[in-house]
Image 1 (cartoon, rainbow, N blue to C red):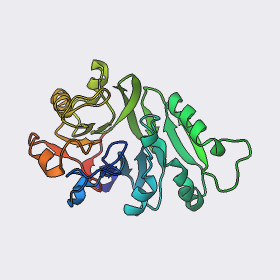
Image 2: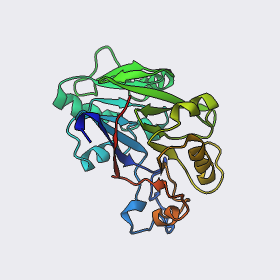
Image 3: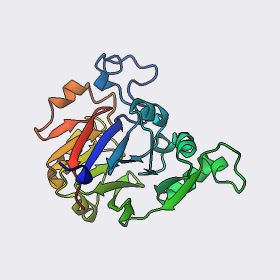
Length: 263
């Protein structure tokens, strides 16, 4: 595999909005000694041509960057505006300082509204020295380019809230989905690797449960699929693995996937 065509995906976090273990919970999943059962808030890092791009900067963003020893970051791309996906954005300050430039930030108009509300101090006319420096770039449900590579948004519904998944070459990433329109499903079909949320076994109002995620994987027909955004109510990593078809896997924090990058 040539480095020029390779894309690497690093799972920065694979847990739900509360993470796993959950504060004050003594269940067997939260008490598990298997490190794969410790899940930070959901995020991935996409690396190609030696450049890093993060999808979502949740509350654990700082910890994730330190764990993976990330020394440079090209951009942050947001799926949606919920707190567990945006709360860590302030910590791009470290990259501002080291890279001597504003951080490109991509998201929908709703994401922009949320960021301007939550990080108002970074958007003022005369920002205080040391605040994060952000270069917001609004995206819609249309392909856009990052360092010459095409990112194709895939709009899914998180109950009533639109969320953007992304396809980059043969890699598709979708989180916080409950329903997906047929025309959006078509964008993801035939990916080599699909990442999809699967919250738990029971029905949920705004997330796929395991049965629904497996049904969607069957429709999209990827070569391999990985489940993310996993709750402590789902079971342990080893228990979930036993429930899955041979081409479906449980993602875990720190997992890295390499694949050829096509347009």
